[in-house]
Length: 235
Image (tube, rainbow, N blue to C red; front, side, top):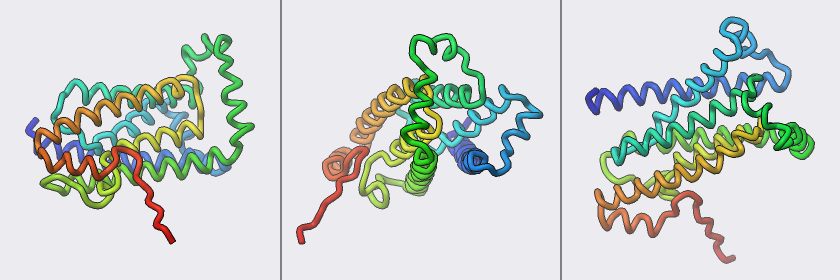
């Protein structure tokens, strides 16, 4: 596939993923508050395994919006695979197919995890998870728009405050889902996923230094990698 054709295909897949993400997420959110759950209707036709696969495909598709450069195809697919693995673990447990979790739950006291989460967070977990997830999605889209339209090094807009807004957005999305539905597998995979994308960010930065030289090195000194600097002006 030619680079331009591939890019257009990834953009189309990513846009589909964003709208699919919003649809499924809002359906699940409304379902938690007593409104009709469309997912239940889908499940009657394709079953729970089919519903899990559908969720994973739609949620994973918007990863195409992340700005992966041609550093190493192996590292790119490795990071994507970690993200898809996180989604599979999450939705497998959400829709009642716990697999190995039930086998190991006596050793990890797994039922207590969810019970404690509900007792401690209550409805706050649902509300906070919603806003955190949507904020992450907005960061992914904003970062993608800036990269997709640019021809040179991007240092303005959201990239003026952090160097990797889309990775930060992805972390927020996953954190939001953890607040909604904490599971043992996803709690284990979450820090692993952070490490994988952190290492990918380092590789991308080395690539950017090789491509833009001192211009990018100066940008790195002025702009944090993931967490923006908040300056409080003296009164």
